[in-house]
Length: 77
Figure (tube, rainbow, N blue to C red):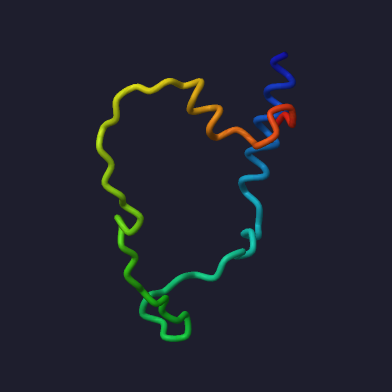
């Protein structure tokens, strides 16, 4: 067990001393670079779809389900 853990530790230390660095995958972002461009900012209202609702009393849930059910009662879902 000690030999396996020492071998793993040795391989990790050798891999850490690699001569080359990994390539850059993403370009470096520099906000002062005019070539990078600027994203347009636009206004989105947070409460655009707000509808005021008042509390309602409990209702008969069977009647509510039947009102919203398909027209053919044997059709299933």
